[in-house]
Image 1: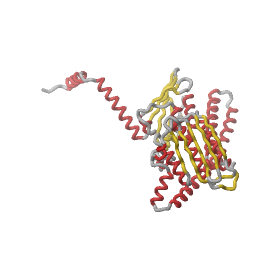
Image 2: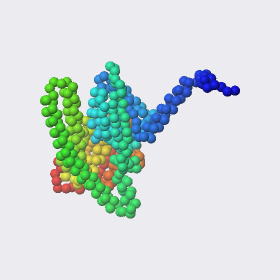
Image 3: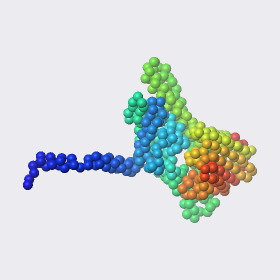
Image 4: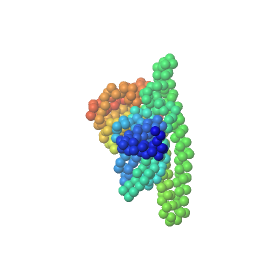
Amino acid sequence: MFTPPAEQMHSGRRRNSRLPRRRFDDAAVMTRARLNDQTEILANVGTFEFVIAPGGENVDSRWSAGIHAILHRDPDAPPLGREAYVMQYVHPDDQDRILELSRRAMRLGCAIDMHYRIIADDGVLSNVCEQLFEVTSAQTGRLMFGHLKNVPQPGAVLAARATAGSVAATLRAWWQGQGLSASAVQSLLETVDQLQQTERYRVAREMHDDFGQLLAAMKLDLCLLQQHVGTSASAVREISTLNELVDTMICSVRRIIGGLPPKAIEDAGLFVAFENLIESFTKRHPIHFSRRFVPPATRLDPRVELAAYRILQETLSNITRHSEATEVGVTASCSSTHLLIWVTDNGKGTLPTDLHKSGSFGMAWMRERIEALGGTVALESTKGKGTGVTISIPVRITSANNG
């Protein structure tokens, strides 16, 4: 029997009314959320949600699945607050800048675009861009979103904490596969180091000559502009905000230039560079550092100085990122034959076998660099009772004075 269209529609409504709509709606919401998570992960993007109190502090956070994927973080791990995220995942050289920009955005509710580097839980170094912006606000606070996108870079797997070990280990394996002798491989590694440091020194000089002068001129122009805007509250506020941003940029440029090992070591010597390095960690981390240095009477071979600086930098980075320590001791001394560095902490400890695990990227890199100089590294640790790292490197004395 033919059923008129109106009756068909009415019959359909009657049949649908008996379906479990709430269960279907819940299932649809869950499916859409799951598909959105998968889309984020495939697109290398993710979203932070931050609830900001009236005073500007971050009181609640949520992370999407894409954020966990970009950071290679356990999907079941709880989200971190904004500052904790920056300190745990943002590259140490970018932390101060991102903290300042984040605080400014949360305090003023303004949108800010940021480009920086992150170090994921498995040690992979990546470049990311993030847009931080306000979604809505009320007297009790505001809701802000951070949209993070991973920006793949050529050769990212050969970063400072590469997935297959260290850059030195990768180059060593490849060159040995070409039939080169151990001495030839070591000579090539030293050449790569020298080329890297020459390029870093060139970049530092250009940053000082170009960025430094431009920022100084910008600062002067803002001061002159402020004298001509009169008493307009909005103009004064905007100029003040620009002044703060320029000050932050000047500090960042100075920190980057001053932190480059060639300049720090060349200007003051290795042990003074050690002192400056520890001071920079003290400012960024709630850890008490004690130190005892016995410098040599003369300068060491530049390759040894550079390697020692990088090794101490990597050791302290590992401690601040993973050990949960509150006390760190650094001892360094130099005899006529060896440079000795001993670093201890009161953190959660690790196992001596971790030094040789292929997944311990920082330790693998450090071991390769020390062995390339004919040195040794030993790790002593007990779970829950801290860690001690002892490094010994043969030295070659030069005629220059040490700082």
